[in-house]
Length: 118
Length: 108
Image (cartoon, rainbow over all chains, first blue to last red; front, top):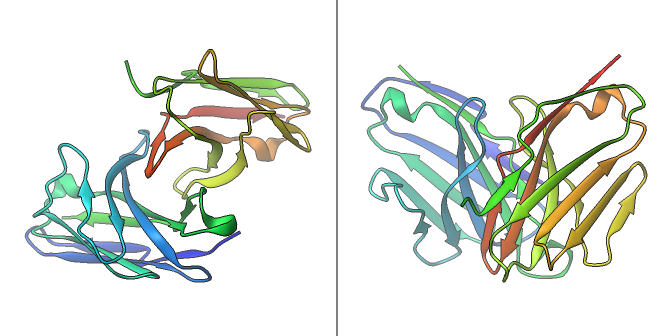
């Protein structure tokens, strides 16, 4: 299967600071990347969908000015949590879907980033 | 009604048992169906895609009923290592919607 990496795997930051999370598809070109958030014992919630070279589409209730998404290349998308607050503490997971072939329909997930805001 | 709903669980079964999970979806235009498993504090991993004709992979069998808009996953001869949360995922176009998951605990 395809490999998607995320960095960092774990981050602790102070309230008010910004945190950037990187998501990379290592062995395929990801035309679409998805960002999810998962609170403890809850389901994955889609935050936004990004297509390479265009603006991300945010789900209802997700603040686009707080969660900045950049999908600058076919292998990299970044999520920046700006002015983080303790309620932003969560498990953030990206996934990638390729443009064709075996990678077209399935999503491949990164290992996730655990963000703790103190 | 939620877009994707699953058996609430948790399912606690003994080793060797057969267990079945159901998932229903509301969008009749959905085209892609998957089962993922997620271990505690880890990312979801694709277990299997679900095709119209149904598909089987070892101890795992997935079926799709488009008319009734549900998907099922059957696990036979369950192992301790099958303990996880099983997520039903339904996709159409660019959007993939995850179900809330059903937790399975296989007990020795």
